[in-house]
Image 1 (tube, rainbow, N blue to C red):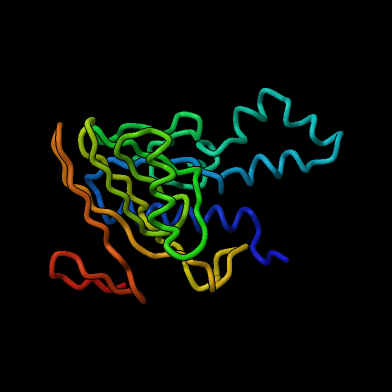
Image 2 (image 1 turned 90 degrees about the horizontal axis):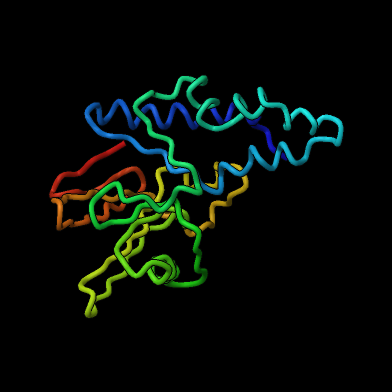
Length: 204
């Protein structure tokens, strides 16, 4: 049984996002709607028949949606909300960005998830749906492509509601350097609160 309320989890998420905004004061910020955001829709669908009629009201649709809920909860206004149906989006030239929809299982699943995402588009991209770090490379007559899984910055000890400590999740992130026609991606693995990036140890 859940101990946390829906509202509490929303506030925790907003606080987490605001930490990113503070750490990168000049960055353009994008929030990619994903499957976790489906909880709001499922909650509405689970309403009793008569209560569900509220969901059909114009004012309900206007205010009970993620952009409004997050903004009202204090999320930094620099975040750009990208709806699920508007993904993938090309934020960085020649690189698709999406929450992700594919998922592989078993040993070596991270790279295979990246492959499954790539094969849907046949071009470079990145996604985070799997909560893992992963990489897939491809070179053919269309040029060189690469798809990466960006890892996660959530707890991997089982504290995330609905998860377990034995989940094959990888804390980490991706750092991109790019021009209009070229990019390079560095995957940064976070192990027990520590990361090594360009010969610098970063501890949390």
